Length: 411
Ligand SMILES: [Zn+2]
Image (cartoon, rainbow, N blue to C red):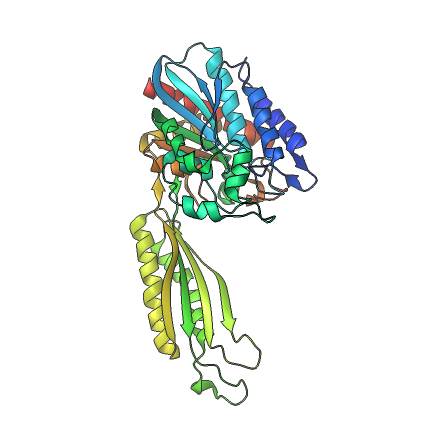
């Protein structure tokens, strides 16, 4: 079969017909529609000679044996959020199919080449993302919590998985899948506005942001809105408001793509006739560099103490969740940069805000890189998610060139 990036676009459209409706993609993991997308993938891989295997965590693998046991792995995810877009996840997988076809057509490759469709990247049904890839990377450490998760209809996660042939207790056995993995490549839509704003079709992903999520609880004194003079107030919201604006300065000062979001403030008593007594404020901070991220958090905490003094209120800090930045492999970043220049003329390096399966694979110690293709209007997880056809084709070409360079490096 000759290499044909246009075929990837046609197959994506076919998949959209098969697994979407007027509201968008409906390939939620552990559902019949998701199974249909897995059958679709199986049919598309047929003819390449790659052998299918579904691992203990439900990840769907296709292996094309090469002269050596060392493996090049190309991955993505067929599952989507409800009412999702037509490209998120499945572009990576179907582009991988086209690359597999090209490699297979040239006879036995020097290294073994594998395509993986990770199970439940989105976590749309049970709220736990990266399920299959975290099992394969061995980072899944929350099996107790997973056992207790239920979907909207009260179905427990282990029961839903069992219906699709996965025993949660045994999911970590999927770790053996990455034993021989020597490189991992993933193409994904950007899901953000950066490449479009630069008028570039493709970019190399440097890694995924580290994240610090905090809760600041501000405590003042509830007091009557009419009888309390302005200079006698201990207004908890005043502290939260100052911090909500100050995080812009933190991001500007730290730089390097730093982002900070005060995504929620809940005020009590929350009535129009009272000064706010408590304000619970959520803060999300992200950076690709661990030291910069630590500095951002330290700056926010120090500022909160300062604002508390200024407003005569108290503030308490609590960490909700954090994850360290994950940096991709420098050699592979170089190959990806070259591949993009070859197909599109200009390349750009950028971090990823969202987490991806690639981050899990990188955490397992496998040299990893991702390619981003421009998203129109930066929108994703909605039916209006879109990418220009010619950009999709360029992205398949770039992934193919990246795969060829990586195979030459490994072989
Ligand atoms: Zn995705």
